[in-house]
Image (cartoon, rainbow, N blue to C red):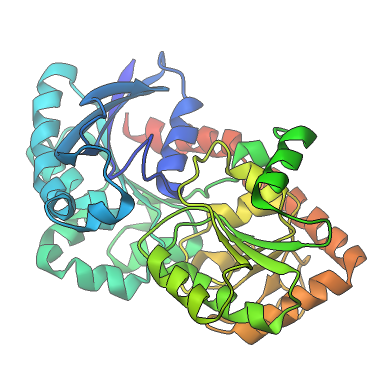
Length: 402
């Protein structure tokens, strides 16, 4: 049996996004007899155990804590010190754990958040393999500007990696620009939420959630199930609502730093009865919210790949999205991509008027919608399923370094 130590700023059960979901989907499909995974992450909540087994991952939690902190507490003193502290506390913790467990490799989940601690460990333990996964969704120039204070280590986070997995060609090109050699790079995508690919939600559950949210028979729900951050452009969807019929609502599933700003914008535009904020929702039940919705809308300003888009396609929802970053690999629009099967309605970023046009086109053309959503669903089944992704990670990444 081999052991791999993962560096990840966040992990289950709290503050889970696409990167953390990817770790769990991959490790759950790798037997403990083959590879035993450990993970160092931030604790934040003092009620969480310092050490806990979750699936095939032994989680080790470090950092400053508070009892049951709210999302906004994470950006306030003292908890906002956790991310910079992690860069140096995590490799120290890794060294202590290595004495006991003798890791065969380390795995950094995202260069900007976990690359520095992983490379610090690699420098002191050169015989241990090192994998870097690029899952970043923020604009590349923003990431590189943020990492300037640690630039030499950030650069080595790329060049010291024995293998780099990028979840899109877009991020793969970034890896090459950072000095990663072609032979060390693999493009292995993320996948859709498995619950969206099977009939995991009953009609009774769907009816109950509709009742809970007050959805009427003639209501149309636009939905976004991504974190409430600037890059997801939920504000553009809210600005589009006044230009759409009054039975069109916007269901915002999740939480994040933009939540209060979005609520203020909703109030400013007098849309309190048309914008629904769910707050934090566990990934295990997010599928329910997609199942009661009619159109997935996320006009991202930047995107590494986009798990939420794939999950929406798996749920047979028509998708309105930009083609920013990694989205261009599977968001194919009839007008913009005439030579490939259409999978979505593409809009420019920061264009509420184009969102309005796309919504109206979807509502007016049910046969077209069925054709496109069937195509998108088939694409996800064939190319973006976790069983295939976990197999590729074992064969192309882990076996190469173990």
